[in-house]
Amino acid sequence: MQHLREHLIKHLITTLFLLALFLPLSLTRAEEYSFDLAEIEKKACQFGGYIEFRPLLYGLDKDASLYKLKLYNRNKENVHDEYNVTLQINASYEKGKAKLYTKLNTTITNSYLGWDDDTALYEGYLSLKSSSSALFFDIGKKTVKWGKGYAWNPAAFVDRAKNPDDPELSMEGFIIASVDYIKSFSGPLQTFSYTPVIVPVYEHINEDFGNIDHINFAQKIYLLFYDTDIDLMALTGASKTSRFGLDFSRNVTSNFEIHGEFALINDFQKGIITSDGIEHKIKDDTKSYVMGLRYLTESDTTIIGEYYHNGTGYSQKEMHDYFSYINKAYDSYISSGDDGQLKKALQITPGNFGKPNPMKDYLYLRLSQKEPLDILYFSAALTTIYNLVDESCSLSPEVQYQPFTNLELMSKLTILTGEGKSEFGEKRNNWKLEFRARYYF
Image (cartoon, rainbow, N blue to C red; front, side):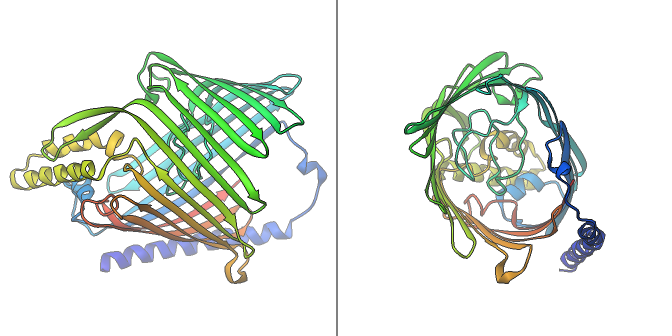
């Protein structure tokens, strides 16, 4: 308890320091406010981004399988702290029909593993448009953002997977070449667009997309038909097996939207492991889909709900075998000091069992309230992800305060619950407390 109190005091001091630092800036900016039409004119060169400080506290679960796997050779503490500083910069230059855009992300982390830093070019591409503005050409590193789901996008074949705990985070793109052709009509079909995408995969070029030394082809057809957004997507090539998808989104009323997304993946190969450590692969056609809604109430409460069926995910028995293998490997390590089996489990985890929400069926619900109790610049939210297969879940209340336009303060507590050998019950921590101070420039 003493250790936990010290960490909480440290976080409180940090929070007060940031408030003391940024609040005077807020007042100064308010006093210097002026309106100038020249300031809102579109400039050829634009620059922006944010700097973020994000400390975290993890309440560790020493009985959990993933605690034993990831921390078996570390100090047996009840609480771990972690500190992250992120600088994200985006810049663009536009002249005539050409535009250059880049987004660079740098994160420095201090945790029980020591110091670590990572710098990645999230996006960096050249965009050209025709004189008629019906054709757009993009080449470079880009996120294409396919799919209509909020927390999950099974049909986003040319994007990395979202983090369902924070779906609005920026993601690193892939190096692509694409064309957008757009045509408008006056009938029930109001808009049509066609987007072919080339995805090369070679050494040092999109290596984590799939098998290397191949060029892949993706395409999307977009229709605005009877006020309904519809997309048809496909990906073919030798880096990944063929896959096909579709999605839709429609505003039933001005404050009520429904959406859906479907993906079919041919010959999907999934790696599994038995409780005795025997690895093998299963190949099958899989179907994944999302059905969801977004509703804004008269009292400014936003409700987002989604059901997700993950056809590429693991069954309850497959996850049970995985957790059982980790526990056996840990027991062997304790009795003999040999961590070979634990290292084997660590190797197979990231691309398989370590994916966000690796099982079959989930419910997502997020309730967010703008300015509760009429507190200006303040908002509150509650998010839950519920595993329908093993009945484990995560529950995350959060509050956010924006004292002025450029500063965002957020605090979030995540509680994980579940029985033994369930997804959330076997996470290395059973709670996480995080604070975020993000300053936009």
